[in-house]
Image 1: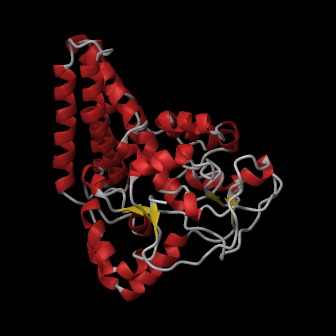
Image 2: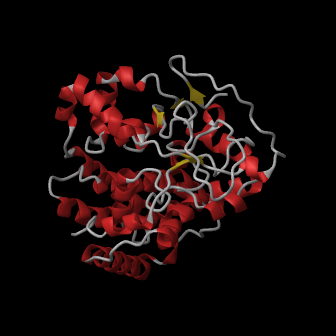
Image 3: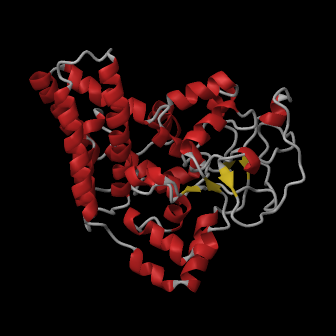
Length: 371
């Protein structure tokens, strides 16, 4: 198995993987647990042993200039393709190689902005995110921020962590064709799923995001034509489809391959508390070369442990606290993750750690985005 490696000896699970033709009850259930998510405890231990990591926190001024370069690159390619038929190999190749890679970087720049890691003031980060959003083609940045805050604050919560697949998705997309469909259109699942699970307050930042994006799109269509706008849309779609950089969506929190410990058959409504001895890791880091174009998002355990450390300093965090991170299971290839997720029977949308939530949490999200 190539995509997950253990740097030190880990516990061995004395269980057998269920066959692909096992009953739906055997194959289809999440890792339900009442254990706390691992990041708060590890952060506390790291700070106790390495208090110097607090010096790594704070915004990274360099990032805004790099983001601006990516935005300019996308507009330049859109202008270049203004008279090129979208249904040509040239258009698709540029959209896949340059456009998708750039827009994935833009998605993840908005991720950095959601943690206020480009500017000191939160409002400056929100406004710059609206500018960063332009090559995506549709308004996205204002909604992403509060949903992503929920992902960090309530990781694994069945109601508040909208990164988790729904039971409907997990049932309908269980087989190979379903998983290939999910991997191909995963950007749509991540964009639309939150609206069906948790409501957030619509603020003036959302309105500004929508108005600015629509005005930009209309101006671009009027000056350059529809082909340029379609380049933005195709780039965004491909960025979250079967693209090497899109592997991070699945690699970050899905329990894949050897870490996927088969569960006993339980009822669909039972919230089983998986034993800590059988509970797999639920966040996975990747340290490969694609981090160079994705703001080190592969350092995902490090990011969840210290979400206020900017991308440029995450490798230093790993170096300082290597005894905490080296033993964790790691992802070696985002491309391999996509392949194994689609074609390995044991890997499904059920392979996530979930925690029983409560709709009472809904009241807690009202103050998440006040600007």
